[in-house]
Amino acid sequence: MTSKDESTGAAAPGSGSGEAKKLYVRSYGCQMNVYDSQRMVDALAPEGYVETTDMADADVVVLNTCHIREKAAEKVYSELGRVRATRRERAERGRETRIVVAGCVAQAEGGEILRRAPGVDLVVGPQGYHRLPRLLDEAARRPVVETEFPVESKFDALPAPRPEKVLARGVSAFLTVQEGCDKFCTFCVVPYTRGAETSRPVSAVLDEARRLAAAGVREITLLGQNVNAYHGEGPDGRDWTLGRLMRALAEIEGVARLRYTTSHPLDMEQELVEAHRDLAAMMPYLHLPVQSGSDRILAAMNRRHTRDAYRAVIDRVRAARPDIALSSDFIVGFPGETAADFEDTMRLLEEVGFASSFSFKYSPRPGTPAAELGAQVPEAVKTERLHALQALLARQQTAFNAATVGRTVDVLVERPGRHAGQVAGKSPYLQAVQIDEPGIAIGDIVPVTITRQGTNSLFGRLAGAGSERLSA
Ligand code: 5AD
Ligand code: SF4
Image (cartoon, rainbow, N blue to C red; front, side, top):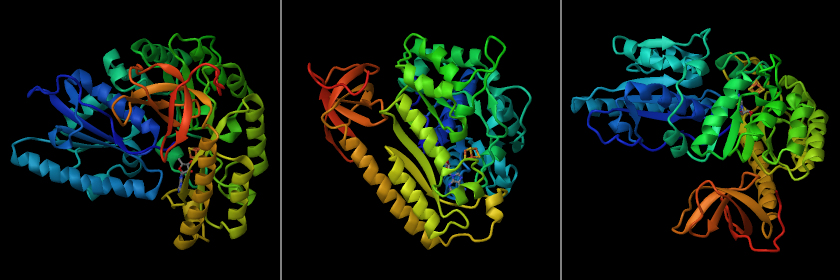
């Protein structure tokens, strides 16, 4: 899962009061961190904390970190330098500031963070967020490191946000249903930082989805590091698959769109594929990382699938939902990757065709098996391969978007547009669409004829009669 780094959003109403305690949370990395950041805000709301987007105004600063690639952790250490400078300025004004490092860097580095960045008050791993109020109290006395995997579930213990807070976060919401991973790809830190795979019970997921829908949310993206391995306990005492869960979610009134990320090719079960075929709410979009197109490299990565097996999964999904937009993650320069291996990846791209993708240079992560391998690929070669791969991906993305021009798609309106009188939303294929039409309500799903393709979005107008619809 990949997304831009961001803070969790606007200050809560009432944050103008001189008495309120202010909380600033910055999220790095994947969507699961965005979800966790929101839940940290929810955990501290009953303690009287309101959110601020201004770090200089915050009594508590939380960096919710990502450890997936090297630069992400380095970014955190440089950001900590800025946070400590802000704390010094605040101290001159007689204000105290607590600094919290959460997320996967916290889990992986633990007490090392206190050594490398003195002044941090609390280091807390992803499983400890429900304990934040108590941990912050303790941290007022001495620095605290909490990286245990507690027996109680943080999901059961985290308070639910108020409905107005839910809607302020948008009509499209994240919902974590599964955490951790048992796959142990040799390049990946996730099995170590997020731990073994666990799924939330069906009833907990449905309750949270009902609360989101009741607050006005129209689209729910189910999150998990290995989300299609979901196997939460159902009300019947049996484990439910993700496909079965989707069927139950699709019945909740108000839930118009369902998405899920990130999936593993091995877990693309038939029930989930059939949900794509049968449920109007299931959006025709699948993020299914392949990482490499070379069988030799896939084996060295311990991906447990071949390129043919990946293509067979795609064929099954396309048979069920021919218009599905595909997305993937790619790593170039994995140890031992030859020019021929890289060519295999480029060929796979050509054969499958992706609507969008994320691609990275391999970076050795401490403690993972691949970091110990010889034959590390030189940086210049990685850069060259990444450029070639990204150029091809960009061409595919442009072609995919160009094919939408002239067609009519349903757009979920999410926010005001860039210019007055415009609104912005998403197509079923996760394309950003700007609509030149005042007066459309946020949360509406409207048919839009795409008129042109811009650099980052498509542009369109409300569809008239006789247009050709791309989706139900
Ligand atoms: N180096 C480069 N990319 C990585 N990813 C995970 N670990 C590494 C690593 N060590 C990428 C994978 C994964 C995505 C979230 O990040 O492509 O799917
Ligand atoms: Fe990491 Fe592989 Fe698990 Fe994905 S499937 S989280 S890449 S170990």
